[in-house]
Length: 286
Image (cartoon, rainbow, N blue to C red):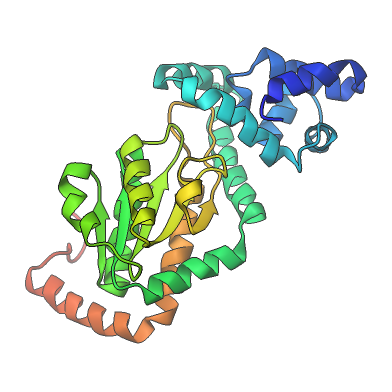
């Protein structure tokens, strides 16, 4: 079932009219469809959302998310940033409320993430972070934005969190990893090689590993003790980081709930420091 397009083409002759519409649109737009939500694919193919879901299950997939994973896997490594820019020109138009379609796609990513979230794994990640001697966050390229946010707030909560980026600058820290440490790897297609390499090494050193990535076909997953998958698809040259950031918010908040007294003491000290150095703007802006 790994060749999803052959699977679709091989069964198109036995499909209902509405399913043929979906199949035809997918086969004619193989580089665009993997990044479409259920609603957007339904709109493009001229069918209902339910028809798209039934189409996926009729092919033997558990649902649209699984079929989408296979479609993305077959095309993502081949697409350049320029290719993805061209996709956005086909999907998002300046007229016809195009800007609202971007918002809707972000909302759809959050809904998809909520539906497939494994709560047991999420709370296991929270417990691992609470028990860790040290926490390391690995992220590169665009995912740095997520890594910096996660490291900044977890450091306030736990006071033992570091950001790892380049292999050259992080090798000494990786050398000292042990089973008492937690390493969080953040990467989305087209997965950064250095992130995968460092995350894999952390697993070899028996550190507890948490992957924040887009699907179970991600190269981070084989090295993850705790996989946390989030939807980030968007037919554009950028990934949608709305759902990943929402998941990170939840992690920080639930870790923070367990460390409330520690945070309060730490924040009081930080407030004194911020006040001493006059960090924040006071009064009204002129």
